[in-house]
Image 1 (cartoon, rainbow, N blue to C red):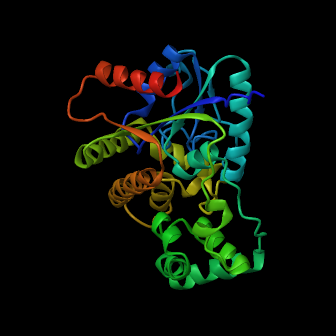
Image 2: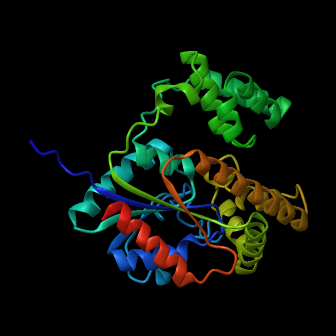
Amino acid sequence: MTTEAKPKLLVLLGPTAVGKTRLSLSLASALHAEIISGDSMQVYRGMDIGTAKIKPEEMEGIPHHLIDVLDPTEPYSVAEFQAEGRRLIGEISARGRLPFIVGGTGLYIESLCYGFRFSEAVADEAFRSEMDRFAEEHGAFALHARLAEVDPESAERLHPNDRRRIIRALEIFRQTNTPLSQSPAAVKPESPYDLCLIGLTMDRQMLYQRIEERIDEMLADGLVDEVKALMERGCSRNLVSMQGLGYKEIAAYLEGEMTCEEAVTLLKRDTRRFAKRQLSWFRHMKDIHWIDVGGGTDFSVNFAKIRDIIAASMG
């Protein structure tokens, strides 16, 4: 009796501004792949500059999926990403092409690669409202501290400003008496895919410099006008989409809570911290082939190295 071969799945991950986009296009072209965005913010239409979204004219004819599929007013969850990702992997494979996830949202990518089961804890709106009020009265760090008491591993992975996920983790603990990090949802089963994970990294200071340069480019490209247009369309600051880096800081400036200079300084600081958390998340994942793309190594050398890894891993 023969067992059915697992679908092949290539993944390119790494922190923001490390250089995933250029490399992904070259790999997709060489490997007849279709790209699935592994970014929690690029699903939103009209949020282009702040998410560093690839432009249609830059895609080089390569199909890109899960980009511009929702309005910013619509919520989006990791469970929805996982379901859509599974569907796309099946469809792309059926076309005889290689499914290729590219992105930096660790939870989303890992959930799809390993088929996480999500907690069955139901939404408790009264509890969520109570936690929202607590955060408003006592601050984000106080709410984060409550999570750290019952689930330090999840608290380490979640930023104090990620109120929605912190409250969800507290909600799961309250209903199941089990930390999210130890629940069945957190158990990493064997991947349902013939998986090859490539991770890009570089010297931390070089990465931070690239982040700051990218933010300067975003501002020059019209980030402030993009955020202003979203707010004028009725996108309130408490939307999930408007909590994204670049959007919440510029929105605070536009509403007079800080100067533009202060907002940019905060954005650069928070993006550096975000990149650090991304790397921390990826370091916990297994089976990643890491490639250092800093230090002046020629693009073609890194490209050839990655092709060799993929060939050895996936055939």
